[in-house]
Length: 390
Image (cartoon, rainbow, N blue to C red; front, side, top):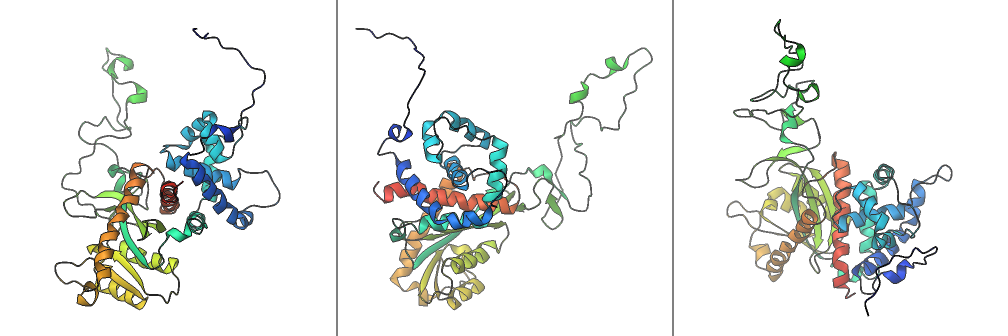
């Protein structure tokens, strides 16, 4: 018998979000770990808020919503709020009821920026890694480190000389007349007849600029859009771009990121960040650690600093003038570290294809750093259901 296609309005509807989510859905395990981690940060949240005034968005919900945005590649806060309005899975994960209103995107953004600083993002990552089910997955002796370029939210046309107090005109080949240019009509013509271009389209903000023969460097130029971005290229044969440099410290047992950082891009940033991350992760450790890295870290000063910190430098050797010798390469552990260190490219790939870090939409090194660390924490969460057999 054919069913009827009629819509009958219901006066009341009872929807239990917990029953609507499949028992085997991977977000169930992720939500459990996130909730336990946020519970351990309750004292830190209390220290950030006063006891009076208008209640803000709960910090737990802000963090869960931000993680959800990264996990599902949602490109903007406005789109996140739109999907949370009708997506029951998103409402369940964040902690909103079926009748709870979603937040205004600008309100959510301002509350998120005040909460998710670099320090708070690091605390969220540390709380997830300290979870009773996650901690046994980590190695506390063998690590790998690497860096990657994060394209800044600024165009090459914004990279202008520092000496100029005001931005130069965008005039170039094919550009329209300057704003102070007047077009005098002929006696027999009216002004409207002599101006073939409408007034609202007469002057283009982004006119063509000819950069041929112009030398630009970070010493003489800076981006007017994001002054913290730097012109840099990581490998020969590639074009330089305005970017930041992201750094991660990975444990070698299961390839989980245990530390993250982001700095301005330069030739020494990777080695300096590696030392900072290993000291931050294992402060004052007396246990002999190993640190795998590529040839970019094969520098005498960096290798010496690692050995003084009780860290064995399992760094790939350069073909000439290498700081690594047979004292290190003769051991079997060196070959294992060189094999496992290549896993560190997987979090970078995930962050750029899923987490939205191929080109950040944030400006300023502090905001980009906090987002990069939270993205590395989300990458760990995405791998946990499989590692834990959930």
